[in-house]
Length: 516
Image (cartoon, rainbow, N blue to C red; front, top):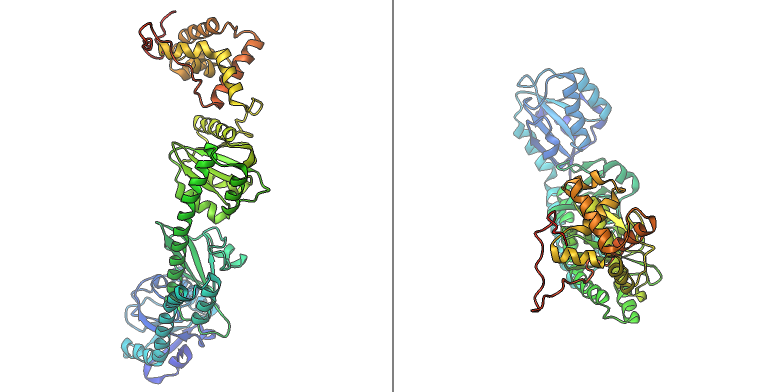
């Protein structure tokens, strides 16, 4: 049972007079509430008759029109202002806004106490309030049914729709489906109401948008839209349903955590080469990977947050395996969506391998991903792909032994010199070449005098037997430097031992080379 604004206006002892908004007199009043705020909509559910002594009515035409507009937009039933008390003069702009919005504005005789109006409304809606309470209890009772009857999300939310009188949708902050069996809102609702600012009221035309907080952030939204011919159970019921959605999401996260641990074990075995190709294919299929699609291995720095990446990929529907070692590794299918989180998560540095098939092994993709990660860190960019930006080593042999041989043949004496004397010849050579052989610029980046850099370059020429002024020799050196990066900067060159089996003494550090 409920009462309309028209029925309240027609109750003689309430002393109500219509000021504006006559087209909205059939609005249903669910409650009467005294509020003296200029923006009462934030604190109400919708359907209320707002009673004010006038303290909350702002002065001036523009602010009064905005005052009415906010309440009309929030679904408040009507405004009742006490006459001749504390309200400023009600302007024609306020009246015009009420008429255009079909939002009733009533004046209350100063002789009528607000409690008389409140009691009238309470008596009229008493049966409805009891019905709503029963609906709220039934909503939470669906949780028990979910456990006992093993209801899927589609059946659970179908029952919630029947109980609440709402059409229910769930969406991520970007408007994608939040639970796979519950539809996302239509595109017009997404375009009009997402993304949402923090603290934004839940009222939208024809329903509510309720945020779903979890894990310290808003993971999605419930859209509860009134259904034609149904009796919606109100904002509180919608909030209860949002709580149920939050619990379902928490359960899903626990399930994903179990899968993540299983996936980490699988990826560890893949990287170590412990799985046969057939077994690897079966494991990946169980993890949701398409056997016909190529894979990409990502290597990320230690600041990457696995849980954030997991949530991002889950939202995008991208299968993935994650493994935390010294670096964070992720195995994803070859597709643009798979690389999007590694570009969009703040502070992340990631390297991506060339696309490959699982049966080809993981040793080469791992080296490619680590090489690309090194370039991403050096450049301060979120993602470098071995095949894309910075992928100027794709022409190098994939065989690690061949790369190792190239490094030792060209740079072996220089690396040994660095190891024994603590010098910095290899890095100085690389920086000088990367700066197009501009000695002053390279010396500035290295933090040394240009004469020091010139000495280092002469020493490199002496050790390698290659002249850096000759194109062919420079190409050999450049290829060897790139091969060194691809194999992870570990050329396996050890300092020679002295006659007593101890390593020879190191030099005094970079910038203090000792002549040979």
